[in-house]
Image (cartoon, rainbow, N blue to C red; front, side):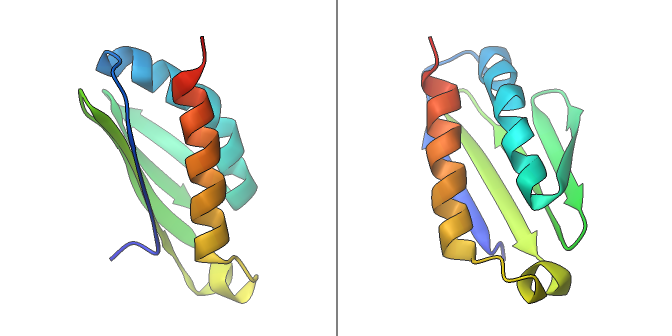
Length: 95
C-alpha cells in the first residue's frame, strides 16, 4: 500500500498530460525520485522511496511508498501528499 497516493482528474490527451507531468517531475527530485517512462506511465525510484505515475484518459495517479530511510529523514506523508497534489494540479492546469 502506498504511503502517498494522489489522484488528479484531467481532460487532456494522455500524451499532453504526460508532457505536463514531466514538467512537474522536477518537483519529485525534492524527494530524490527519478522517473523512468514507458509510454504514458512511469516508474519512480529513489533513495528511500519508490512508486509510479499512471496516466489515463481522465486522471493522473501518483503512488509513492516511503522506505525506512525516507521515514527516518522525517518525510511526512500527509504533507508530501498535499505538496504533490498542489504541484500536479498546477502542472495539469498550465495554459
